[in-house]
Length: 286
Image: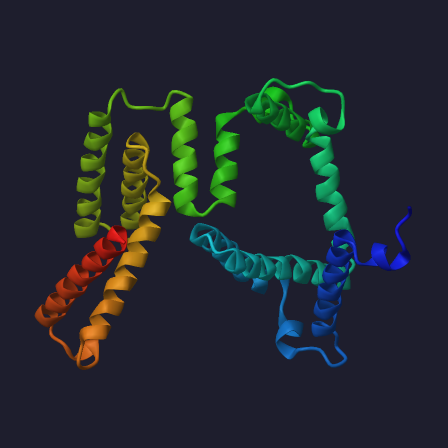
């Protein structure tokens, strides 16, 4: 028995397409010179760039929280940025959302010949290798050019947040032989860079100080790699702990924190730290 028109219209795929079309229409209205939103009309691809990054991070945070509702909401905010960028591009004749969707669909098909073609693969590593070969061919590169370490590392430096890029660069360089013999060598390098940073702070200008700070941070990233620690996760966790402890200080303070002396703030900090630790232990015991 064939589906009735009503059934076809209410299929999951049709519902998804209808919802996407409604979003496209809403964004187009927001950008319309006739009754649109002044804020949206003032935006350009460049002014929206911070929001793209921010929304991507918020998606990651929601995924880490494990809250499906939060994940769906943040994915929606990120999808808005994609649709909005495509709308602005379409207004000046650069490309449309259709071209965006067509492009990624064609790329996925092209780079998965083991799924959409007749290529056989043994494992995920072979899939990754074939992906890189196809990607190089698309860019007109030879296999040797695509495999150049400097080319790979430059891609990380351009496209990833600095801390994440530093870890990827460190990992790839180590895999190609740029590695210490043991962890003692990494610690020695850290001490060397720390001393050079101190010297730059005492004797050099801002440019040299920034350079030495960068060297110190990159060496610390290498320390993290040796101990199989993710520096981005570590810093994110520290940021959250700082905020939680600050919130705890505000909860027990009787006046604005700015009115306390440094010694008094230290006492509040220790109280908040102890209270937070006790609360976490209580949750673990439940």
